[in-house]
Length: 112
Image (cartoon, rainbow, N blue to C red):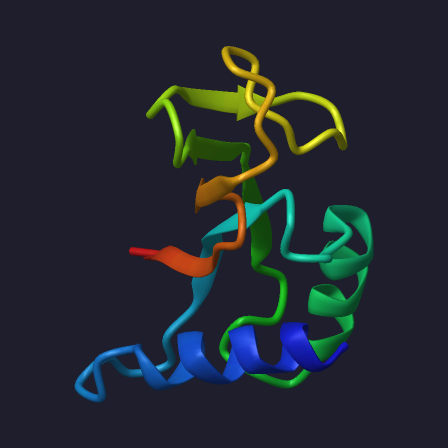
């Protein structure tokens, strides 16, 4: 719920002040697979958190970002599809995480 409330607060504060009675149609976010966010739960909490705000009735569009890594020893870059953090090339576990931890508001769509 805390994440949903923060998304609503950030989105509401991003609406230009010169727009009278703004109505937000959709908030687009990017959520990494390692962010510990459950998309369906976030959508449910978002719906509750938007009540009595300019975002009430807006939809939450979630783009899930896969986990990508780079192996430190051999430099191989890969997208992980299993919970095993191991290089597919040299089998090392010494990996840098390149993506998958994101939790970003990508854009806010206002009604015309």
